[in-house]
Image (cartoon, rainbow, N blue to C red; front, top):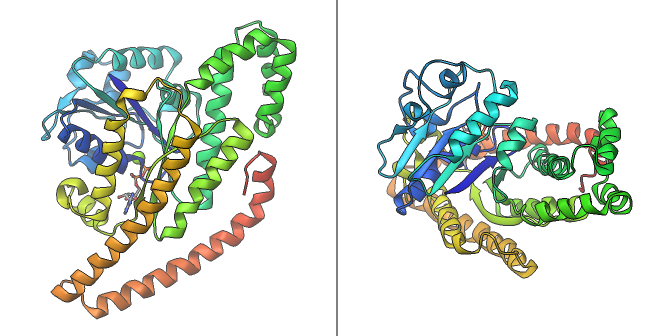
Length: 381
Ligand SMILES: Nc1ncnc2c1ncn2[C@@H]1O[C@H](COP(=O)(O)OP(=O)(O)O)[C@@H](O)[C@H]1O
Ligand SMILES: [Mg+2]
């Protein structure tokens, strides 16, 4: 079974949308999929999936009710797709105990007859979220082309690397003592420059360094850039990649881009996953493309990803950004000529977009003032 944790750092970037629709796409491709809503406390995956929430979900299970784990794995309307709903009984993944976390992870890993286990992790960088993300070396990081979203995606990866260090350094080792001393001063850990820490570990504790390198070589998360508005937005992926290379000593694969699609609001309002509601839409097609890439990479999961392959993944995403943009425009033209969209609608849409742009400009000003702080945490602009 392949575990596919989906994280983002920041909320509202489309994690749940990707989880629900990608799970359906994989199931349609013949994979047996289990999708779990680990965004406890703010679960909304059932809405994306159009699944009527049953009495018992993960929250009930974790609060110690007398139900078996397999009783909260539900069949869905989609052949090959099962669903583990979260519920609001537990205020968040961050709040479950160590024992609950290990028990939950053990149950999830032991699920039978599944090819993919997709985990919607919710927002944040708490240690529980990081631990579920690190159940696989090849999790997905969903982000959007805004500054707060890309910054949080990068910080999520930075925290994952710290967690990997922590996990690979043995208790009472010199390397662990070094991390401890940085950790006592929370601010200095956030500001810490990973290559420098690793340099010191190599000097004082080479065994810990090799243990970390082993773990790190298997850490190959993949990026999904959602909510593009125009092809230029695709550049944001390169920024995250550069920061990861320079400050985290890791490379990031690009799994694909997804445009913002207004049809999603209609799909969500009708509680129909967009991939079922409009399989031909640009958004649905982007999800199918990601599912295809996942399936075709199944063979080479354990192998080392060569830099050329990673470069290609960014080139492919750039092409997708251009091709999909044209498809989107064609679609608008089609709607206009069929009369489904009037010139008036179009004028209204442009007006709305101008308003959004002015709001974004304000947000941008505000964020610029915060950038100095972000820079000190090793984020490359
Ligand atoms: N590509 C997209 N096009 C249009 N709307 C989107 C897109 N991706 C996400 N959304 C919408 O944005 C909102 C946040 O998405 P969601 O998947 O709930 O984010 P997250 O799980 O990361 O918090 C939802 O209303 C969703 O329908
Ligand atoms: Mg969500």
